[in-house]
Image 1 (cartoon, rainbow, N blue to C red):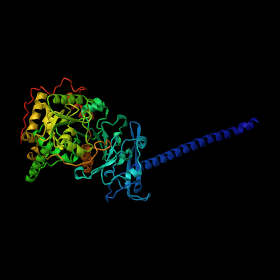
Image 2: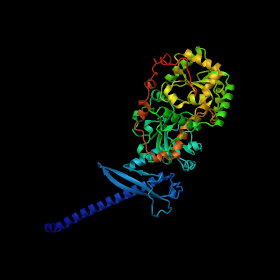
Image 3: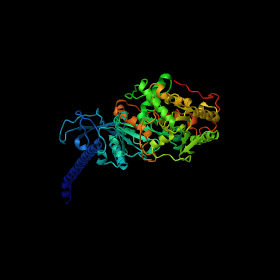
Image 4: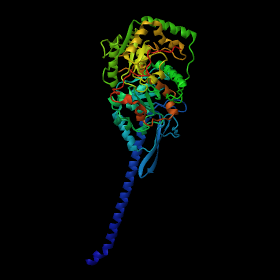
Length: 553
């Protein structure tokens, strides 16, 4: 019995050893197969995921449109690179017009408008981004089909006030643009627009997902004081070089968003051109390549005759002295100061009719009726709600005064900023007087002397290159409709649309190193102080002119 056990012991041992080897080999094969399966699954995931981003407008060599993902084949080329031990994917998408899934000859389109190349970005991050867009989007094929495929698309990232619409198909706007609010259309958008009021630091897209031919644009219509003090916007927390362009009222902005009729945009460009010639060392707008401006020449005899007759007819309408329209009577520090100034002017004997929330007069419901009402006045108090904020000259000057054919009395902006953009001898700046009494005396003198008063309109025909904004465009847009854009709000969008139609965002690569520096650092201390420096007085300056004198060209 013992000898039998000894005899079979080596055989059993070897058999057990073989079994262990077999088990190890089977395990290795199973693990390898599992890895291949996962790799295949991941590749399929990637291929399908990248198909989802091909709902884009892009020109093939035959200039045909690839409008849906069914029109193209997709091939994902993967390169795995190791950076400091971190495994990351280099993903390139190639497309072809062939409809056959097994077709060959994929076209490498990195240089085409559809630049869908992602560098040093993990696929997991890409999936996270796609899921994020889905949670923020109501995207559907129906919403995509509503787009005009032959026009650039502007996506409002924070669409609190702006419904989907379209920028007019006019030459000055470059031929028109789509305006959308659906984040699902991110990948087909040429510009992503972020509004100062609504944007949130925790809700900004990662700039690494910005397409090479896509511009991130920061838009603000409010003063620097309002964004810093009232809305408490901390721009220093925004990543450097995050935005490509700025769209504001500042002369140094890439996109001109001054609150003027968009059809009169060339008027301001003409003024800036002339101002730069007279002041070659002044800070001016840096024109983006492709957005150059050719100034117009002197007016013709026919134009001069027409403008003179228009001015004479306008004078016959003026039966009232001064008007002021305001709803902000104290929300901002500047609003408090300007309300006190209006009260002082009234106390000194100036007849002022006050419209809106700060007065007893109702504001007409349409812009046409509004302008017609104001045209009966000789002066309009274009008082801003902020003091000495650089270039902050709003619709109070452009629309309520010049557009309506009224001489503006300006308070708030720096004199040098007004001189840079306003027609010469078209306005009266309050800081040119040493007291409210002297200002009122001068206004009353002008109101009684038509010849002296009409000198503020001679720029219509005497100053080369400038033309009256008065009646430059007619619109029936309802002022009471908060969901609709005013004509002056359209100006910035029109200029942006023009730049996109010219392909400036594709030809010229630019980013804003520091939005904080652009917006806050270069501002005056008076503007960004919480109370606008309560000790500051606009009257009593030793440099003030008394009485005010104008120069007639």
